[in-house]
Length: 269
Ligand code: HXC
Figure 1 (cartoon, rainbow, N blue to C red):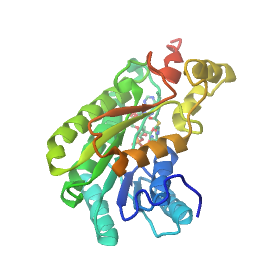
Figure 2: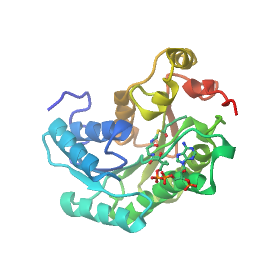
Figure 3: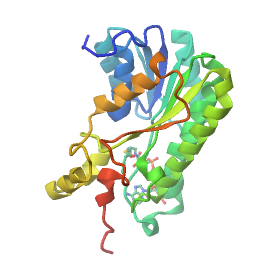
Figure 4: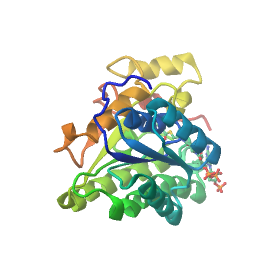
């Protein structure tokens, strides 16, 4: 079992992580497991789901669940949530992290391209949150949506993701208000440029591009998956029991805009 600062912080909790089969979300799932939670993850790819399950089990020494499920399919999400409660008894922690993204100018987007990203990010978050309500521990449940800085700061080539994530922000904040009286908290995490992720790969086509991106971050470095995962553990712990409806930027202090992603330039057409 690997070491983690938060050992036992989430002991006895059950966590469901949508999109938790890779990247930042898998890091969050593993951090939850290291902190003592039983963890279920869903992702579209069955092989990746099985590999994530094994990875989480190895990190925590406890059995986990990895299920193939597309967040765009409400019935499939509901089934995955029911399977989790049958296996582990309840859901205390829920992360909506499944996302689809690519860089395209607006004139390069078909109607279906725009809709696809809105379906995955926004409708998917609705599906995961809505389908979980009856199964959440009330009071005490903590929900997190992974969002993006472009929900609040315009970035070229990101109209589809920005529109979807702006919706995710308001959906989550509204949920915090509506479900707060039942004892459910809901917050959003904005990862900055995180090393090893898809988003950073877009910036890494040249070393100059990456250096320029890092130069826009006050911390003068990229973040790590662990730094996002630790924030998620904190938000789902008792230490954050009065924090709800908030957008938490974990981005090295980018107060002037959208940090690493501000250096994206319009393509020559
Ligand atoms: C324009 C594109 C496109 C592109 C796809 N499409 N890629 N349009 N430019 N680069 C269009 C397709 O032509 C199609 O429209 C429509 O989008 C749907 O594409 P499909 O491939 O059929 O959809 P699907 O298989 O569901 O895949 C969804 C996806 C894909 C979003 C397109 O990229 C994906 O599955 N991504 C998941 C992983 C991912 O993107 N992670 C990144 C998260 S990182 P037509 O009209 O032809 O049918 C992140 C942080 C980035 O979000 C931060 C940056 C600031």
